[in-house]
Length: 320
Ligand SMILES: NC(=O)c1ccc[n+]([C@@H]2O[C@H](COP(=O)([O-])OP(=O)(O)OC[C@H]3O[C@@H](n4cnc5c(N)ncnc54)[C@H](OP(=O)(O)O)[C@@H]3O)[C@@H](O)[C@H]2O)c1
Image 1 (cartoon, rainbow, N blue to C red):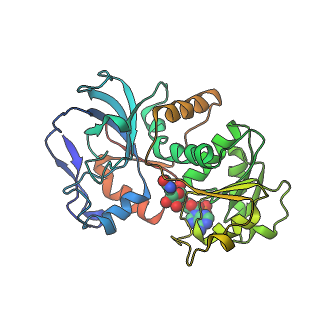
Image 2 (image 1 turned 180 degrees about the vertical axis):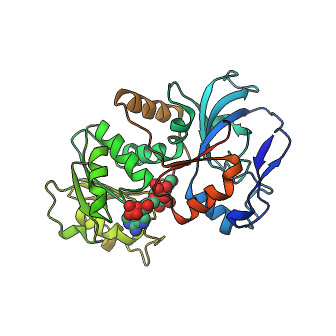
């Protein structure tokens, strides 16, 4: 079968299609025929910095998410031809991921979906919409009529969060770097937009947020804690600001009284959460967002675009 494999750190231009044997089926694992795969910045980090480390299984087929059909269910409850999505759990790092025609995946990270979406639109969903939905529900406990501020709103996770939060009945405020993005964010469901000057605690919101999805990360996290109303919830999911941790973290001084701080890591999706996401997408006619589609043969170009920032989700089309 055709696949993209890496044996260590490399440049985008060194990626190419090769032929490798079909994976051998084993109990507890499911063989999936990959139709398409959403691409993620973490796959650039794997290629540039992580692939030389021992904790990466090598040679490895990258790719942390995919959509496709069950080709061999092994001993699982799944059936040949079931439409599925899969994400995370070590995919494309501890075991081969989605940049290949057939991928062997742990049953626990493969989820059935009942949807009429085409493969490319479906591929825009797994990691992006799960990260947004998990942050909103597990970490921010989002409720109807909550006032949610999304910081880093023009990122793909940010835009998905706006669509989902609006569908869940929240009032959404979007913070981004440029006023020229406002119109697009309003189209997606934001009711108020603000240019993020990294000091929103002084901003005169029409309605002060009681929940904040922090995608810029530790760079603006403390400002988010000072911005949210009390009681208020802040969830740090992203690191767009390229500051990866809070220095000298003193919880008593850092977290104001009545503010609840959480993080979110997209490693443990459940079938129930996936069903809830697809139910929202279906009932509210949410359009899965993506920017560009590349074929497996165009992998170098896809990674070059991913590395410099595509300004939206990139989809790798594995089966034409
Ligand atoms: N916790 C988890 O499990 C998890 C899972 C997935 C993703 N993430 C994280 O979530 C964040 C978003 O991921 P993504 O894939 O949606 O990113 P993305 O689509 O690659 O987002 C890139 C966009 O974000 C905006 N941006 C970049 N730097 C910014 C900054 N300093 N302040 C505000 N906006 C900025 C830019 O839009 P403009 O040019 O329009 O400003 C840029 O085009 C990332 O930090 C990612 O690592 C976390």
